[in-house]
Length: 349
Figure 1: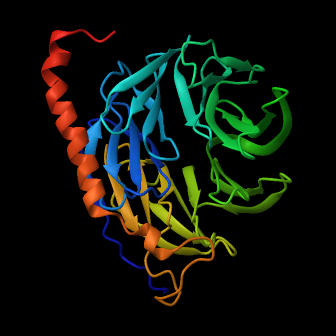
Figure 2 (figure 1 turned 45 degrees about the horizontal axis):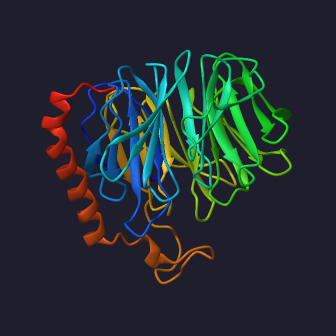
């Protein structure tokens, strides 16, 4: 009855196993970037606008469950089933540091100021590593009540949030005291938790529900029932008027934030969707699936006059500086090629 738009995505191949996490960098002078985590143990870096492959971070010996980039997209981090979280140079692909854990690392994220790395996993311990002193022991925050699934920073790195694999709710911890200050109650385990770009909302996916919480007062702002069990959801970052959700039915749906009405339904994946994320400008969004592919979808007309610019950013910022990106791409690949022989000769420590 109502006309749905048919979207043709950019399809990014390269991973040989399911894609389980995606992360977009903010817009940098070189454009913006997309990093993906996969059970194939090799996180990949791509041009966020075109989906073009830039490089693969090689060194993990188990499935990689989580990945992220720092604010300037100069370093990457990944958390793995090999009991490590690794820091990488995003320009050369070099491993900068490996943080040992006692069990699988399910989640990792850089602090906003880029000096700290937060990790969590099966051990039920939140760890904060000081990247300026990588050999120093991490700070361990009070034991989590369950195995950790997601982690994030908010309030200018004064608060951290975490959700658990085996129980509902999102717990918010005061970094200074290391204590839980609030729990956002959900019926099902929260499989995805995202802090909005402007810091106003926390978007969560639990079971067949997507919820939006006030990130400052912690009240529930919106809650929408989804047509199936969803694993991931993301709020459009510029206008905040749309959100996406993906899950077990293999489709990525776009919804109106204010009404919950479905705007578009994108089909193309051949397995459940594990992760969805909006690009930093909101003009596109990416999905990662059990089928091993990443698909980048255009959000479509923003329903604003062409010349109009969001209040919190300039349209010019979103144009990728092609020469800079080309230089970054070439630098990464050349560096990787040059080191290929060296790596064969010397074993990785």
